[in-house]
Image (cartoon, rainbow, N blue to C red; front, side, top):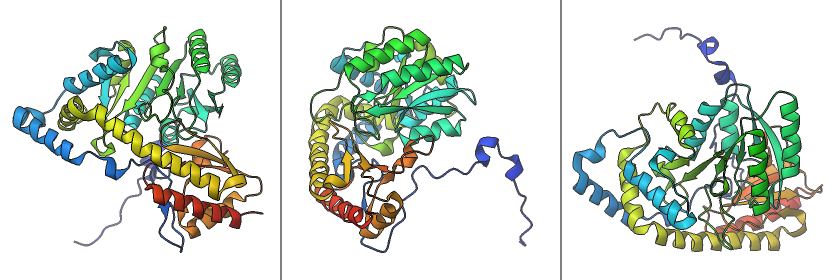
Length: 403
């Protein structure tokens, strides 16, 4: 058949689709040097996936439940997996939740997407940390929210700065719809919010009647002292929506996460589930696996990732030294690096590519173009030996990029 002229659909796209968006997981460009050691994205260690136990859980589900395992389910999610989450929240944190407080989603960003659809109109203000998880920024910007950034330090979000920002926004008639925070082992900052700041944040949110969205993806990957109680556990006003995920403690390919919040908020979020619910089959397999294995598996994961965290911190001390400052995470996957003023950040990017090491540039983690002299390193995917070699290459690149 002869080709015909194709119509240009550009003028038909929605305004948000007419903007040029980068791919959320675009691979970094490679230089001409050795194959890159990947510090860019927080991919879990592939050797940590519990292959054999998942195979056994799958066989059990298929043999026991037959056709029901392959059928449509409810939009809220499979009751068995909801009950696993409820049991773990009660056992680990003393949180009393019910199925009505929960929904299962297709990964953590899907949970955040439903929060935005339920609460945010185009042009509404949301407060984020600076730096902020770049995936969350993508969600906010593509849904036409207006992120306003509040700085982090070693104790988490700076509450005094937050209070000033909220007061200014309220005076302008732009009261934020919610405050988005990653309080534990921050992505990308690697820091943990102190208990005092958690309580102050809750008090400020209650005073101004602002929702808090608590992204707690890394809580269970704790390598030192346990983090303070979650914002949800401390909340006395029903203002916190907490997001959790199985991506970091089981397998991201299963695309299973959850949102926990006041019943009315969850019911509104469910209105924007047009996917007829998260995979019932995957949820049943995950529930079967978790009942028997998840606690022991998390113990094993902590050992794996603690070794990698230690390898990265040691490598940075040995090979980078005074050329930068970096955070020292007590859990999670990430180290945040601030470059010395002597380093040309644009030149560093090119030198790192040639050395064969990559990272997430800080500009991806700010809504206003800041972050040129900072970057995020993820230690979750490479081996410990690769991490040490990667920090050596990074140090070489920094020395080559000195002005």
